Image (cartoon, rainbow, N blue to C red; front, side):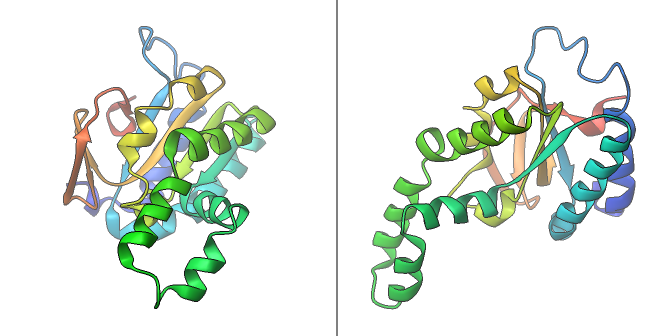
Length: 192
């Protein structure tokens, strides 16, 4: 449905919402967690759009930080001295062993969320943008992050750029792969 809308139009809408003094107010006690669906075929344009968005917000005195899940996961794998070993031995390592290693090293609660929290704590932004969801699937699932992100929303508004569809109940990665039901994020497309 939204794939006819170009990425610049989507980000212009996001910018206009985020600069509004009323944005994030009147959530009725709900988490300041927002999901911005983007057309799956435009997921690789999201990073440059986020950089442009951050620059525009900064000119208005609004601080933001961008967290790309793919880059974050690669850093975690490097720090754990796992990435090079996997890359060098990939042909000789059983697929299941690689998957179980990635699953354990990239644990959402013990590895990924603490890293996201550290970035947010250092930057103290008004907005934290999370991207790269499609690049880390299936090792990191968006609902796994969203279901465990409560403590991070104390410090700022979180905006997840999601390559696919979100109907306020279910996330559909790439418009195809249904994730667990998730209804706590506010769909930015439906906000004024």
